[in-house]
Length: 507
Image (cartoon, rainbow, N blue to C red; front, side, top):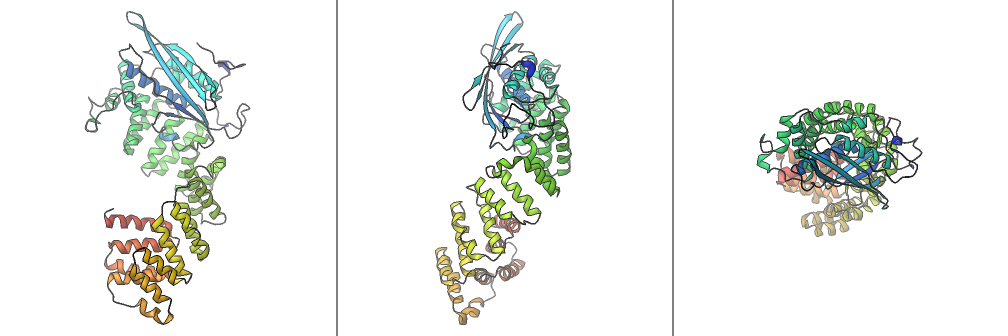
């Protein structure tokens, strides 16, 4: 066994994990609660007949074992992290890379020896080189030995029985273990996956075959669940993750994976139950706080949702998902004092997203602060919503009584008839005539748009609803309704109407 080059430490000092979190750990600075470990897929060792299966099995074993360390999010190559930790807020996380090289040599007629050499590097370039030896047919003890060294270097707590779990054989059936490695190899790209038409084939799909041979092997079911989740097959993913968690009951991440699958199925109650189980295992591990808050919000538990996010305050202006969730919690509570500051944080965290700016503009429209709202239109355009920005400028200019300016904007949008009506609105004696006309749907929509641009979205909406009552799938009516709802600050209704417009337009 190779010792880590860290003065004053021994493997006996490897930290154990409890639900108390990291606050009392003297070896870690505040803000270092999470660690992202970029794990390179293990290369198949040369000269070994089952090299790809060994490489796949080792990669999966180490990725899953790394999730047993508090606050650690492993990511293998370009593959997304396991669903249960995929929403971890990593803006201030420690960054590590881990490369593992497995070498196998024959030491007898039917005997092989394996050496795993690791290179674990921090972002600043400081590296250590853990090493372990073992049997390629029983990789658990070598995985456990290496993981002890990695846990020590990362200064990460783990459960007291983690080493026993790492060292245990995945299955009593060597063939099932071989198939588990083959299935994992297709996940990590060490072996080509089956073509689409063969996915699910019991003989030719390695993942399906591995599950069939040993449906209780946790590693296999975890691999199968991740593939199903990536394919949008959430019901299958839930079943696989459930089986994996039964086979490895001390794994918080497997429970979290299943919670994510239940949430994707709309079963928030089931997800909440599993998140409670996760908290019983690992307390307030920050990897899981964001999805826990999302579930609490869905259940209407706004105080609980806010409490879940409180430890993540360091990322409020740097993680867009976190910032957006804070806004959603505030909106569910009535979007009271401080709401605009939350939207501003979201803008900072998501500089290319138009949605927070759209909502800040809508907030000012609801307050009838049209001049202030107009100042947000340029930023809306910079965030990729150019057409929407121009229409907002048009409506706000009209609301401010700048009808000639609004008419020029309408002409720029190719809406000459709207421009004529807006110019007519600038003349009091022509206003009534501009809003009268034939009762055809398009004439009524033009009137509605002129009314909207005149600063009366409620009346405009009534006109549009009258058209939709006769022609519910008229795309132009749905589009104008969405614009009107946005002007009224009804963001959710506007998004739903845009979805109807997309269906009606065949977009």
